[in-house]
Length: 152
Image 1 (cartoon, rainbow, N blue to C red):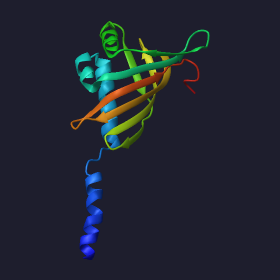
Image 2: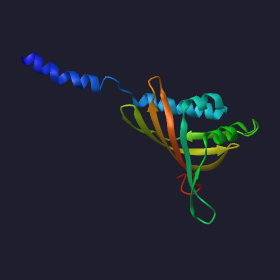
Image 3: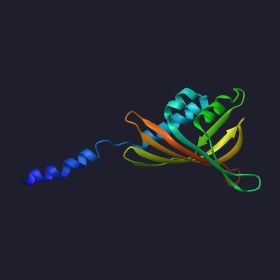
């Protein structure tokens, strides 16, 4: 009887926690995103993004006013593909803060962006991802962009 009660107590916990995902898997998905981003591989990037992905950028204009811009996925991919091969660009991630709950994850990644080998701006990426059973897909990506307060 005692073993039966223990089994009844433990069985739901096994079912609930049967599918776990690691922070390393989420980090790898983000690293893969930026690898394909730097390669301008829009086909693979499209497969990593949910069909209705939300892309947002938050910055300040020259007058110091806050602006939030939404960008449709297709516009993002066309813009990325149109960068000439002669212009180098790199988004260098400085840290990863990842939280996971079941099949959903959030990642906060401060970054520095370089254009033509020169520092351009810095900010933070905020990723929302979900696990679709075969891998992590990005459902939302918001970033901040600023030039001040970036480097020590």
